[in-house]
Length: 187
Ligand SMILES: [Ca+2]
Image (cartoon, rainbow, N blue to C red):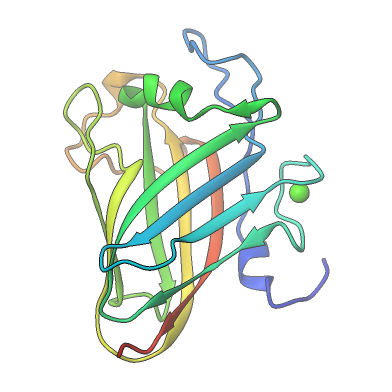
């Protein structure tokens, strides 16, 4: 493994195979080739886009395939995830199966206690889906850490029963990628 500043991201396993369980209506075997998480500051300014682009289509995070974000302390952002297959955007296909899926965010490093995300959308059953979120950056000082983004496949709507939508480790991940995140000191 090539050592680089992306080492934290490289430590994260990546599963980029599409859902393949019986009953899925998405394209069988569709590979998620690119995922973006766009953070638009509520106070105005340029959106930040965390990106995983599996340029060599090998399903794992390689050097240069991850782009992190720099957020501003004290700012609030609107977050939106988009997913792309080899032939274009497939976000709508994921949304169509929102009762079987959920996006899960896990902060690491100095993002713990500084970066908080809350769902602003629900699935067909009224549980958090989290394709869209509000991201709040607490405090005023600079910091560095990580944000893990997972798209969990619960297998069936019945499997997604907890009100928090908390997945288990054994559940399938259609996306599992970790972005480096920097907080710039607030004004
Ligand atoms: Ca790759």
